[in-house]
Length: 159
Image 1 (cartoon, rainbow, N blue to C red):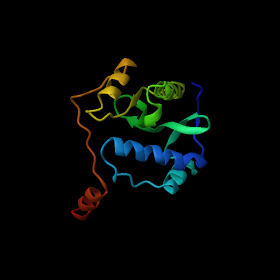
Image 2: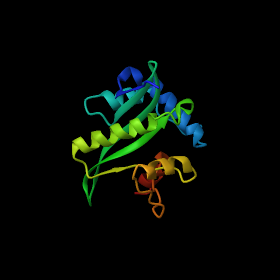
Image 3: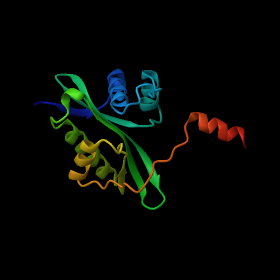
Image 4: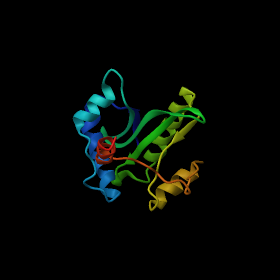
């Protein structure tokens, strides 16, 4: 199969959002996506982009994405966070996921980062196996902690 991996463009954001929504449905959170095309365009392509995105195209159609951003570890220094690596359901198992992960790793290596972080849902055994096969460590003894928008508002109200 012929595919191309390239940097995303602003005009790719509707297709990027479609894949984000597809992932949310796969992860049984169909109503969780709040980000809009406008958010993605402004946040990814403004004066200080909040993220970098790679897209995988097959016959000019976006079939996969890898969305990353810079983080800083107090233990390691500069790191990259892989927010999402998504391949459309129809294209899973074709090598697109490997190609997207490869470009993220090469990009991160060129930046000189010390680590690449990401999360994987615990029941997605095929993704876990894929990442472990690539040499990633899945830290099953760590829990993800986050404070959502409502929690932030409630927290601030109590200050």
